[in-house]
Length: 158
Image 1 (cartoon, rainbow, N blue to C red):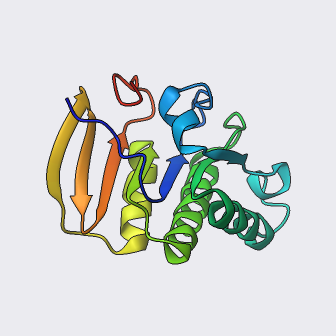
Image 2: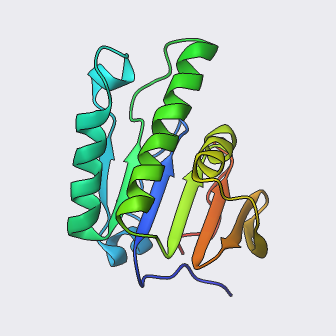
Image 3: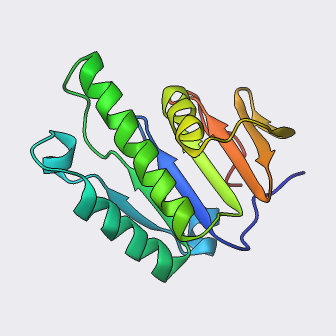
């Protein structure tokens, strides 16, 4: 049985607007992750994302583990979704620049693609399947867990 590492840094990107809160999961409690949702102004495009991303980076420096969530119901169309994915990918890139994570979990298939593309990560080694469609792949020293938005987490946090 494969368990997620509680060592090192952890970044969790919840790119699905259907995300359920993770803070009660034993793994999340163990690593002391803080969850920060996207502010309404950033979500709706009323302001730039710099201050939000700086808040994320400060929290990641302080806690070593962070959950970045959209935290709002999807309201727009395709352009909205594309912008949200771009914001999540930019946030992930800035966080990885602060400290390379031991574990990075990305929820949402399109978000995962955007994040990995933004990071320029293209070579992976298959690691483990936690549930149908929920897999971990390795890029260098980082284990990357990918979960489609509508799929259950399975035993990932067990």
